[in-house]
Length: 464
Ligand SMILES: Nc1ncnc2c1ncn2[C@@H]1O[C@H](COP(=O)(O)OP(=O)(O)OP(=O)(O)O)[C@@H](O)[C@H]1O
Image (cartoon, rainbow, N blue to C red; front, side):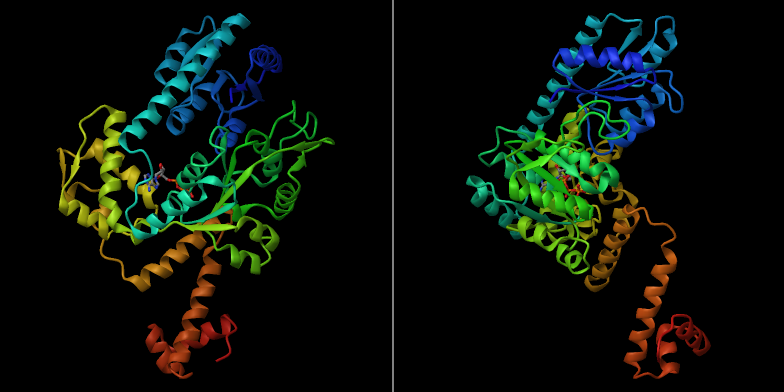
């Protein structure tokens, strides 16, 4: 899709650009300030972005800087006054694709956007080719990964819903993409959307689109992800974070194959395959009433479980060498090699960020490691200081980590009192039960004085 985002506080500029670009076949979306663009970029991306420099609040240069850091492949065109040579030079230094001097000719502006679009398509193609040359598919020799490959093969003729479970960074989106690319739908779009990244009140219009005037700020009709994915696959990541009312709408679309845009009265028919993913235990969410049971069954037709990287350490060497080779190509430098000792150290680490963290580590090593052969001391501190994780300890900390990520994602504040209360209550009950209710012994096991234990029992309202 050829989408262009326009950022200008001047409504008349947005209006004329919108008209000209729509005529040239682009889908446009307008923003009156930079902050709204950054929010929208966290869950969706256009093919080209045009921004004014002078705007109230964050200006165009600061926006450009943020985009260059976080979305380096998105071409940005900066609009600036003719006289302001400084900001033009500045724009290039900060990574702008081009600058457009105001006042501009609309044909020139459209031609420039078209050029930016073509350039980004070319860059995307080259990146894909580099990836394909490096490795055609997903890397994984561990039995659990072989199981996943077998499932991708078995499902290649079907359009069944698939539910992928796995921690963050284990490759859920990659596997969803492979399921799409090996399906009869491969000629149509694969659209990915992360539920946890979208502000709650925008989820519905993001999925189903909206009509012009449906709510304040809905300046034009917008097609949602369902329409964009028509004939193809919609990948819904972090489905456990989908608000309950949207779950109800999703269920209806899956049953009827049609829906209404927000504010719309005419139904839209679509044929979309859903692949959902989550790091959470959906059965538990169902039990707690946070996830609809009927939707769960609808999505859970086929379930794939992606192992955490620490559970398939046999794949670390291959994955790491693959990422080292990719980042060397990207940065146009010699590819570095991992020594056996470095690989052994990497295998001992617990990789909370999984394959994504390994990929970032390899990018870091390509730049930072001094020689061609990477030794254990060249690894980032957190890896070289890693000690083998005790299985039992690792498990509960991992579960705690997941819970913590979830709470923070939900925007919770002041979480320590609740954590402390739960930890203490669990600690006290377990110690008392291990000591058959004997307080003095239980206090000793915990490492508190007897008075502290008595006070905590009262504070936490625990019957001893
Ligand atoms: N088996 C694999 N082989 C090669 N690359 C992989 C593999 N698994 C993951 N990656 C790479 O690791 C990165 C993270 O993968 P991906 O985005 O698919 O994870 P995810 O589970 O969807 O993460 P999140 O839940 O945080 O969105 C991507 O760049 C992906 O290409």
